[in-house]
Length: 217
View 1: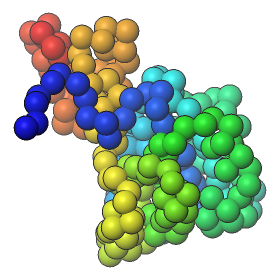
View 2: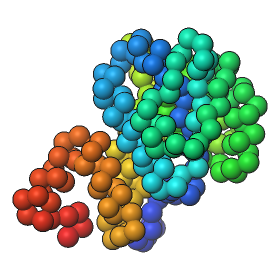
View 3: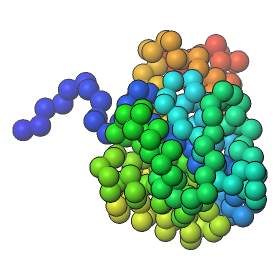
View 4: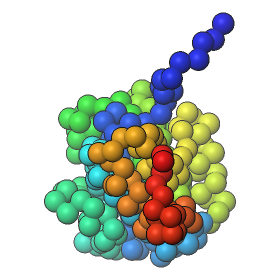
């Protein structure tokens, strides 16, 4: 018989148990992205980047042909990781660049969280490759995008069928915090949510301004 205990599920993420890989959040890739509004995409990407930086998540930043046709990485990412070196590739599949896999091995974590453009190419390729090699894979679906709704949805389905775990950007932030009694990251989490958390963030601003209220109290 199962017995309930106050312990988190094994598949929940924590700041130190995974590597985040942000892939090809670049202007040229965003121009053709139609499955999500570019303003929302940039907001969600900022939320993920700020969360990872604030919680000290091991993070890899990578671009494709940055000096050629794809253009610079989103400012929201460089703002969160001003000193993090970007790995610029020629491969569409990030996982086929040995510098990426070398860094994954150097970090040494068996869980990988992906987000980037486009879902059907830049995310499917490394996600399926990592799964084949025994890694646990998570995909932040709303920090990804594709040339059509169909392309994004089929890509997500393909990865889920292979064993990837989908999540959202706000879910990522709140899963890293998970307990409002964790005072050392409370202001970080609510601060990110207030700026990039959409309606939830507005609710935090309202509750704090009108009633002095806070999460967990």
